[in-house]
Length: 141
Image 1 (tube, rainbow, N blue to C red):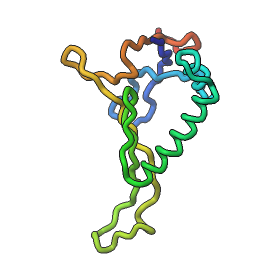
Image 2: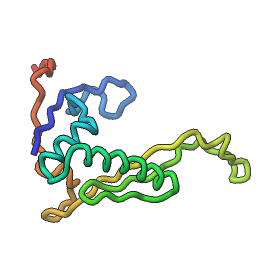
Image 3: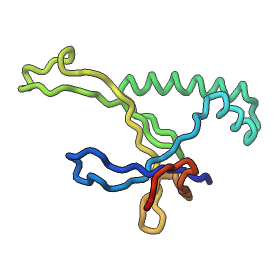
């Protein structure tokens, strides 16, 4: 289990309902590449890094094909991936056209959840800890 660092940020938008209130925002210190992921999987499994890289590479291609074909891809222990569409509204159904109204696509991710003591938690966040980052330069006075 890991510890997720955060910084404190104040809501500064005058029009915001919670103007002036403070919130924790996650601090992300690095990215994990496919190669690093493969190295870590290799340490914990009986397959070589090259084999893991080949599987991960093929996984991304197969997932892309499935998602673009309207399928939902479910990765056990991780979650569900599916395509979503970003659109602009049309006045009527008759005036809607894909060329005019569809402005893009996105990937929707729904993390796998599990029920623990009458509460649903995201499986990949089970046991997460939180700590204020050392570089948080907020005056708490």
